[in-house]
Length: 202
View 1 (cartoon, rainbow, N blue to C red):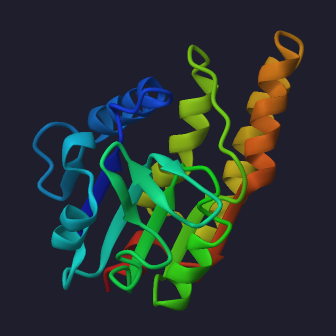
View 2 (view 1 turned 180 degrees about the vertical axis):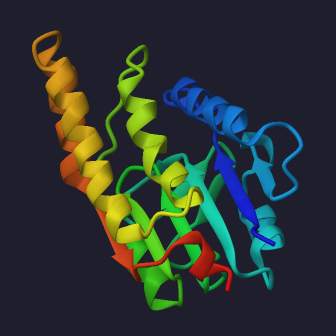
């Protein structure tokens, strides 16, 4: 059975409202009774719980919406839960989809080197602006395409197209918002194999 782990730091002071909005979209998509999905929120988002949820349970799909830094660390209000040295060997045969600053700079490569099948993330700061639905729409877009069966190489290209469409729509209204979307588009990174959800769980 497909297993999906959603990690959201929805209580973070700065980006908590953005993460909550993205999580609500995920919950609407999956509904309340989808046995495939485990949601880890801020209170439980820590190193030990990630180990508990992932160790020996591959393959799975893992999504992380939280802060990241240039050292390759993803952290919540409880500290680092995934990094180049923390839980980095537990993601073999997995699809990892992150919406976190700098996640694609060091962490993605480290995970792929340790057997992660496919990784999506951002190699610089991830930009957002509360109140503009284009940010959560673009953030979530690739994950939903994967669940619906598209291959990861195609997903990357469609995410770029999605960003371009949103940039074009907002450029005249708010140039700053369009420039932040452009930053995210240029920071998007895809590493690893070209897979779809069916081949991951074969």
